[in-house]
Length: 519
Image (cartoon, rainbow, N blue to C red; front, side, top):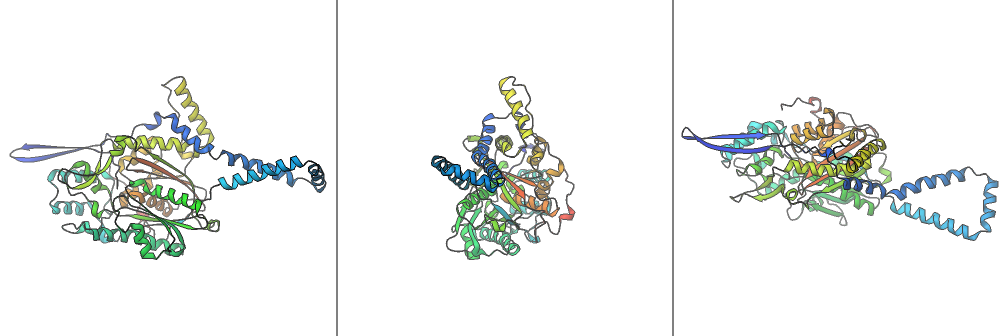
C-alpha cells in the first residue's frame, strides 16, 4: 500500500487559557516539479532503444512485402526464365535460400505473440461497508487511539482528499473497537478476490481449469499459504498452473503483474492468464498519532480487480483490448526515493506506512523518466521531431531554450491516472496539458471508490466504458505510481467499441457522474 497525496502537514500545539488548543495547517503548495522543462537525454535514448530493438523486424516486413509483390506480378514465362537462370547458378540459389530461411527464422523467433485482454472485473463491496466522513470520524474518535490533533488532521485530509461519502472500508474497521486480526484480514482478501473472480468467470464463460497462469499482487498482506494459493484452493485450478504472488510493490504493482503475465504468455502458448490486483486494509490501519502515517487511513479503501489475458489468436474477435506497450521505471537506487513510502513502526511500536514530504517531487522525477522513455514509442513522428530538435538545441546551443512539450493527447485517446490523491491528478492535468474530460475518470474513481491501490486504474477504465467512450482503435494509457519508488505505464488499444461489463462497479450509479467536486 502506498499513497500519493500532495499535502504538507504541520501540527502545532500551544497551551492557551489553561487548556490545550490544536492548530493543524494543511498546505497544498507541494507540487510536482515541472518535469517537462528539464528532460534527461539518456531517457530519450532509452525510449529509442526500445524502438530500435524491433528494427530488424520492421525492416524485414517491407522487404518481404516487396518480394511478394514482385513475384505476384510475374507471368509463367518470367518464372520459367528465372528457373533457367537459377538452374545453372547453384551459388545464387544457395545464397538466396539461406537469406530467405534466415530472415524468416529471425522474424518468426523475434516477433512477440500478441497479448489480448478478453475482459476484466472490478469488485463492488456491499453497501454496509460504506464509510461516510461522519462515520469515519466518529469511529476514529471512539477507538480512543487518536489524540485531538490527529483527529483534526484526519478531518482536514478527508476534506481535501477528493473522496466522497460512498467509499468502503473492511468490516473489521466498522467494529468498535476495530478487530484487525489475521482471520479478518483473510476474510477481506477472500471477499475482494473471489468477488472479482466470480464475476470475471461468469462474464467470460472461462473455466478455472483453462487458466494456465495466475499472478496476484497485494502489497502489505502476504499470508502463508499465499493469496495465489487461496485462489487456487477456492477454484480448484489445475496442478501445473504457473502461479506468482507479488508483495511490497505498491500501487503500481498492477502494471507489473500484467507485464509478468505478458512475458509468461510469450513462453507458454495458447493459454490464459489471470491477473488479480488488490490491497488489504484490515491489518494495515494505523492506530497512532504520527501525522505522516495517518494519511493512508484517509485515502485507502477496499477494492480489487481481476483481468483475463490470453495469447490465443482464436480469442482475438471477442477481446476488448490488445496490449501495445509496457514501460517500467524504478528509482529505488536513490535513497530518498526508496524511503519516501516506507512501512515502519512509530515510537510506540505501532505499524503504519509513512509518506515523506518529498513524495511529490520524487513522483514527478519518476514520471518524467517514464514518459520520456515512453514518448518515442507512442508519439507521432511530427511530435518527436519537434521535441527532439528543441532538446538538441537546448543541449548544444542554449540552455535557456524551452523544450517543446509533446502533446500526448495525439498519442492517447483516454487516460487512466492512478487515483492516489487529488493533488497528483491536478498536477498531471496541468503538466501534460490535459483537458478536464481526460482526468474525469481518475477524479470520479477517487470520489466513488477512494484509492484502491493497484486496482484503481481498472475502475477508471470501467468508468469510461460505462460512459460509452471507448471506440475501436482508441488507445488507453494506464499510469500508476508505487513504493520503491516506481512509475509504470501500460498502453492498450481497443479491439472494438467496448461496452460496459455486466455487473460492473458503475452499473447503478454511472448516470450520477461526473459530480461537482468541492475543492
